Image: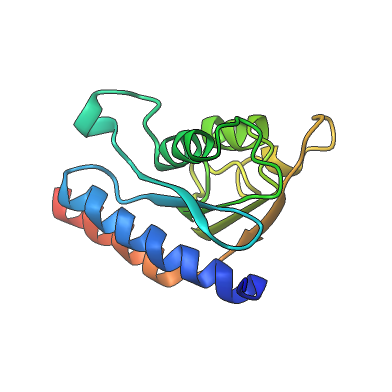
Length: 155
């Protein structure tokens, strides 16, 4: 039995927040991401791994999308939802579109590099051949607090 959409989004965000905390504990910016299928089952997850891997593309979203594609054996994740603690950047929004996820759910807004409605709106750009539904602000306070605490500790 699948969870109702709002409940499924909150459940996925809870796991993404756990992954973000793991990223922070390992010295990476605290961002976590989860990919769920249409039934709300987690098929991929990731956390920022840029510092751990010295890979500039190892954002939580990219890690989670790669894991989900490997899990289902297909790059096409149509019908799936990408849930992430921070509004995706241009690279991650592009990766979400390239994987054909149907929805992107995020917590905190990124007013410096966000590409899901704040600085850019790549995910809903009508000029592109693929778009995704965007749900913003799920557990935004918790996600923002993780980021705020991480950067305050680095200052």
